[in-house]
Image (cartoon, rainbow, N blue to C red; front, side, top):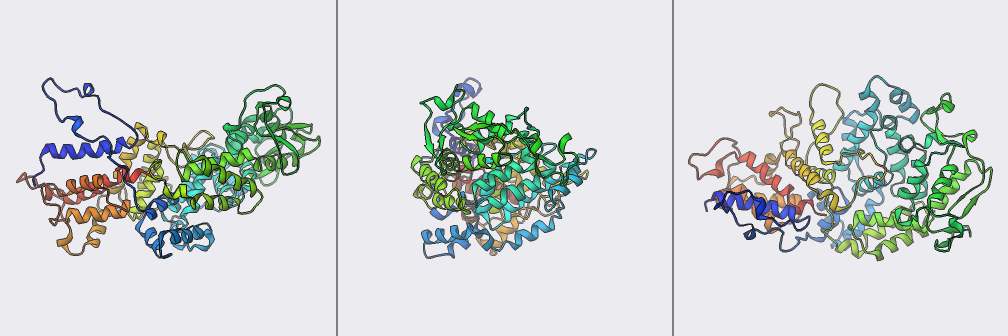
Length: 600
């Protein structure tokens, strides 16, 4: 069958309309077509704006897509080997992933070692001396956060401990610190290594204090400059609004909140009365509680103290007076124990449990996760607030829930997740590394393009972390830049700009290996293969558009010559021989840009 220009335009428009329609009803207004009178073109009403029905992958594909950084055939094969049916396999896979130390991650470790990172193992004092103290070389000063960024990308692509990496991403958003802060950036490896990663499946209370004491968080929210008589409320406000109780439990400015009957209370784990909601007075008092918590070497008062870059409590800078937070008294002279008591209060607070559980459900289940699931997770979070594996228990409940197992398509991959998912599905060979040469490296291009999507790692400047709703990432700017990034991955070389250098994801070589018999290399077989690789299914619209584009005028079952990449427009009806290798990459790029790939 010959492919007419109209058919090609229709196929292309059908693909784009299906993609953009995934974000909502984007009906076209013919007045915006800017066509000349009498030139009607293609009738928009004849083209579907949205798929008639949501394409739903098999259970295993859905579950793995949301609990990892992207479905891959290797992950799926390992999953299939775990049991006789998907329910049994999921239970085994989840138990394995929630015990990351039991998973051999040697291949990822070897790739990390090959990158030659030099800062990731440095102590805070070493980071301070080797990088924070450097003021005349910006690259050297910010090398630590650059290496954390590259190492994190490597782990997300290649680690077999996928759920751990997904959860690490969640907690970095929850306790968000801007990585390129001039003072916090040089200390960022310690924040990631010591404050976040040890507690990912552990205890929230421990992570709460560890992040507070990290230099990157201290600099992010100015706690290091909070003194008696001059408390800095930045950290205290975000501690309550973003890290624990959440804005859902904020009641604003209320005079005499402890005497206001509209503010509900409860009895805490020590038999003390606490308020369930916080007001501005609680922020101010919490700031007083944490005065004197600082970083050694960061201020005039601590400039000569030992172990610069590490947490230090300075009694002389602490407000020793009586304080009152959430209806509870802090007696005078409490010292550093004031702060530890505050963290205890907030970690065991039912408001914290509901707020954090809601965010976890939003990440793993959907933007509007059922309140019944949120409350069940919150109840467990609250009951197990002192357990060393509290977070592991809560994640297990969410990921074993029927709400997780049956939901699909209510979220979309954020740009960085889409890119990493593509690299995983493409079996890419890519080791991001910082660079200080004059060359424009592949790593730099990749990170630059991620930044263009608005989702570069550790680059969100506000303390609330990257947004986690479909509405934000389906905006024209974020989605448009994502759709530029995904097909570009197929054109990137190991040495950027060198066309003789291997691709980071050699689609042609993998296709030839999948079909050693040239007679099997038809558009239908090839697109079947890549849909299975990238989507775990063959959705009719995406599959049909990709097949039509790859085959051109040839029949879908006709073998294609994938060994050439040359001009072939004469005769004009043999486009199936025109730039075949490039067309193969573009066809795979169409699959990557499909709504089926971007959904989760």
